[in-house]
Image (cartoon, rainbow, N blue to C red; front, side):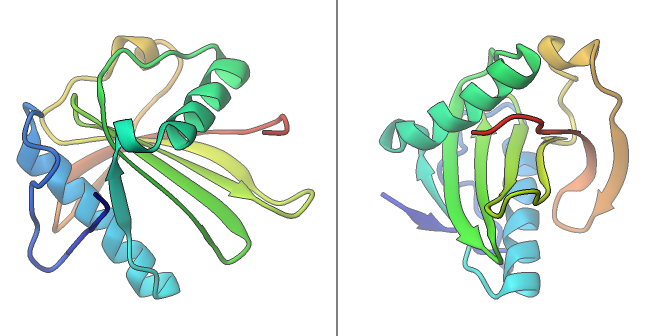
Amino acid sequence: MPYTVDFKNVSTVGLESSPVVEALAGLRANEARYFKNKYDHDFTVTPAGQAPETLDWIHGILSRERNIAIAARPLEVSSFEVDGMRMAYVFYESGLAINVMYGIAEGAKRAVGFKLSEGMDVPEELASSFKFARQKSKLAGTIRGSYFVIKGQH
């Protein structure tokens, strides 16, 4: 069942099994606020098991581009197009959020972003390859983030 994320009244719906549930809910709300303010897009998530194609696309990019396999259990995904970009998200039980920004036009920007919820450790599969910068969020506390540029076609 799809759920439209409300960034004014942050809810933990769908994320209850996470040990950092409040911070992960804030991180999800932070993403929802960004897309609403910048693109007037309502950020909707679906349980990961109900959208395997989105999860497979993200995991395929991670595997082929950087040989990364995320160990944490995926809870929710989101996939949509906005302003010439295909966007996809996966929110993991550990507190990790991964997003793919894939410009549809040839030569457009394409990248994978990682965001860590406040209170979680850097996942072992990312620790040796990425440095994480900190940013403050009213909704999510301190978010640590990193990214890489996608080189191939997906």
